[in-house]
Length: 187
Image (cartoon, rainbow, N blue to C red; front, top):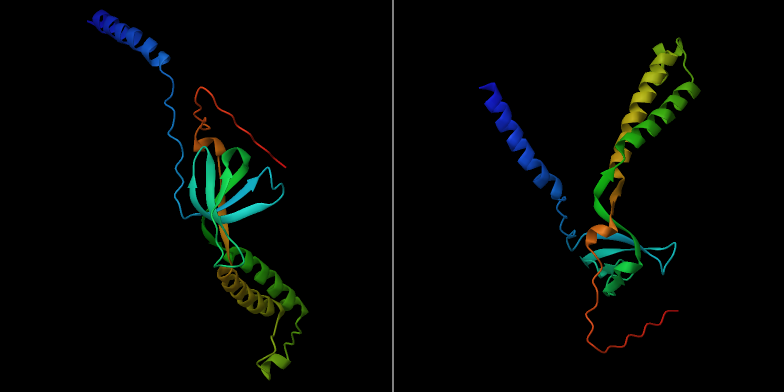
């Protein structure tokens, strides 16, 4: 019985291995970015500058967007050749900075606690004077940490992620007839 099971196992293993080795991984479909998302684009022609705007479409031939401008009524469509694009970032949303605000608030609170005058005698008469340094550290540290976290939560910035340009698909080749002429001028 063991010999039959072993023979059957080897037969199944032997016939399935060449088929599995001959198949390559499937090619993923080209990336389809949704229109209407905020993007940042860097190009070869505008080295060192970025273009921010709203994406209208992106494929292997071109990236089309409406650039963000100072005049909201003057919004024209901008079509950039995909070969000219060096980097493309997509905005995922906004992030808040409450953690950084809390750290800055705590540092300021501790600095204020060390510079404040404490008096164990005067604190019994005047309630605005703290009795000990540890009380000053606790009051100033916690209060300014909470205020800093609140201010940091009000500050929002964009979260950007880069898009692999080769994921847009292979470049589209122009269909040419038997006789064609193409002239390209660049300055």
